Image 1: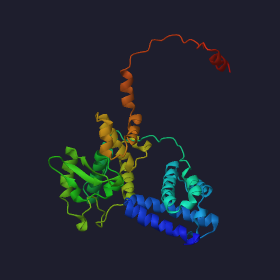
Image 2: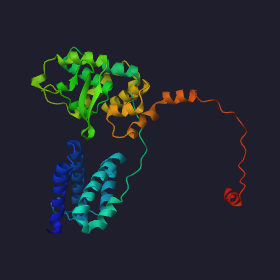
Image 3: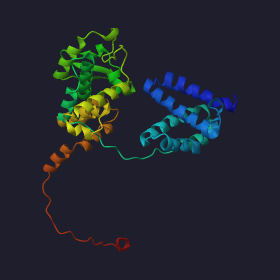
Image 4: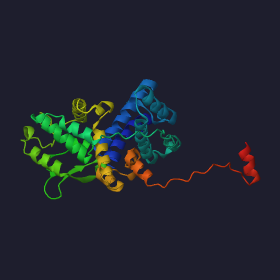
Length: 333
């Protein structure tokens, strides 16, 4: 096998054998890795003037990968989170070829040593109860579209399902009666069952009596019976938030996305006194660290904790006087 042909062959085997056959990654992971290498090869074509099918493995050295990541931020408006996500895909590929092509171990180790970029954690945005009620009241339930949107918004804000989980729900994923819940296959192929409130149960019972659109099995189909896309859900959320802001002015100062509805569900549970570990299971988080951000965002919990503290006796501060000669020298610098 020539060096020129080796890279395309490795890429094909990485996707078909390692990701699909051996690791059985989800379609979302596969699409993310695919997009990373599309961007990488287009960058190589623009900067190295080499067609992707003619690239050699030696072209993808550490300086080239760093230049690619910098270009994502500078020219593609990629956030640091997205940059790190692309780097993860590249690292996964080079870990794979470390065993396939050990002769390139020096080049591979230098790429694997590229660090992820640190960034400030974004503030968790969520809705207050009056804002939730205003958004749920916004859809016109006299129409089929309004009833669908109302049901989708109610389920999103009560269950905290991700957009991808909402779009993939089928009608038979809803189980009513004793132990009512909705079943979904979430991120990382983790199956979970999320309990439903009485309000959600009643609304779903009514919604499921609606004739299936064009025989669709989707719980929230579009007008043609197909599944809603993430962009469609983003659009309908923005539309109803704009309408609700006329009755609830505080919404005008907030950027409400479908993910904000997920945050809102978590904060509602937190305010109700649900343990953070239970919330992590509820949301389908891989690690409890992903859920810790809600504790930082909840100012009410911090105020309540502050109220429990005993007042500190005020004493006049005194200057530290080191007893050791070395400490005295350092203190004098």
